[in-house]
Length: 172
Image 1 (cartoon, one colour):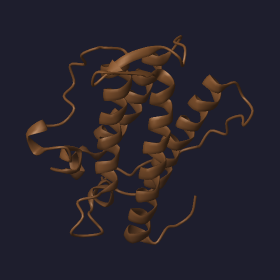
Image 2: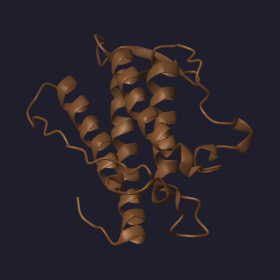
Image 3: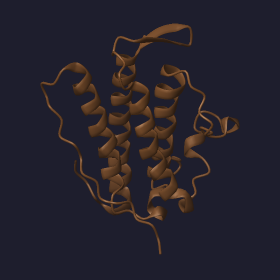
Image 4: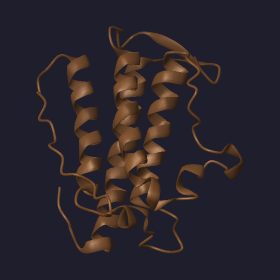
């Protein structure tokens, strides 16, 4: 039996919450929106490249955002050294979009959700003003939230186009 991405509920956050809740709420909305774009598709559809010569796939987006979450929250902000590999750096900066394997779709999907929990744990209890050094520049947790909201928003747009090419589904 072929695995199919499950339906997801997207959270509705407050539009007037204090900044920490507001930023976390927007990030969670975009996280869920990406999964919403995958809902109902088979592993093979998630791995399909509907717009050659582009190597962009929904599964590649899931892998990419797993890496982005891990790098920003756990490696840069929390200064931890996760044992899990990000992806083969020998493949270059687009490694998350290479060697896509439909048989790994469920594991990759669940890996992203697990990474969200680890990202949230890394940020929990910290001020948005808390600083860390990234490539010899001082940055803050606030910047990570803003960066990831933008990253997810951009890739949700990509997911819209991929989904439409795969099965004609459009919409929020």
